[in-house]
Length: 360
Figure (cartoon, rainbow, N blue to C red):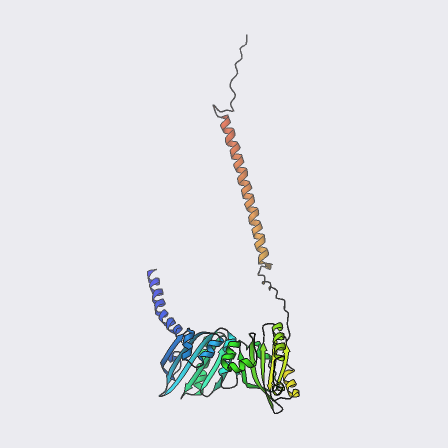
C-alpha cells in the first residue's frame, strides 16, 4: 500500500510542473512549438482600461467593450520578430467590429478564427469574443499563418457568425473591402469622429454597419442603423426625414426603413441607382414555439426502465406491508399469550378462590 501511494505521488508531482508550464502559455505558443521562434522579447498582460492608452488603437478597443489584453513578442532569425496580441472583449460583436475597423484587406472565412484578414506582414482575426492581431517583421508569410492557426486552436471553439445586421447589406454594388461595423454609438463616435456622428443626428443607441457602393459609375455610402425596436426606428426615420438639409444635400440622401432598421444612402447616385441598392433591404419576424424535448426512454428486457421501476417499487411496498402485518399479528399473539399465562399463575388475579361447603 505504501509503495502504491509513493508511486502515485511521484507521478503526480512529476506531471504537475509540465501541466502548469503548458497552461501558463495560454493562447501563446512556447518557443519549442516552432523552430523559427528563438526567445520571448516581451510578455505583457493586463485588464485595466487605463493602460490601453499605451497601445495602438487603445481608445477604440476601450469603446467597443474591453476586458483583457495580452501580448507576446518573439525573436526570429537575426533581426526578425513575431508579435501576437490577444484582446478579450465584451462579446463577439465587439471582436468582429475591431476586425472590420482595423483590417487591411478583405475579410475571409476562417480558419484562422471565425473570420480573418491577411496581408504579407499581418494576420488579424476574430473568434468568439477574442480579437487577435499577429504581425511579423523579416518573417515569412507562411510562418505567420501557422502561428495564427495554432493560436486559433487554443481559443474558444470556432463557429461564430458575424452579427445579423451584416446580412441586411444589399449585394448590388457592394464593396466588401469597405465594410465597417459598430456595436454601438460609443465605438462609432470614437472611430468616425464627432462630425460624422453629429451628421446622423442620433439620439438613440443602435448597431451600425457601413459600406461603400458603386453602381452605374455612381458611388454612394450606405449606413444601416439597427434600433432596439421598430417603434424607435420609426421615430428616428421621421425625425431624420424632417431634419433641415440644403437642397443640394437633400438630392444625395435616400432613406428606407424596414422594421427596426433604417438605411441611409448618401453620395452621387440618381434615384434609379439608389432604388436598386435599397430595394433588397427588408426585415421579417419569425415566431417559433419551443417545446421541451422528451427524454429518450431507456429500455431493459423490452420494457421501459421507468415502468420496471414502478413495478419493483410496488412489489417492495407490498412485501413491506406483508412483513408489517405478520409482525403486528405475532406481536398481538405474544401479548395475549403472556396475558393468559400470567392470569393462570398462582396468586394471579385470574385464579378463583376455593369455596367451602358445610353439610349437616
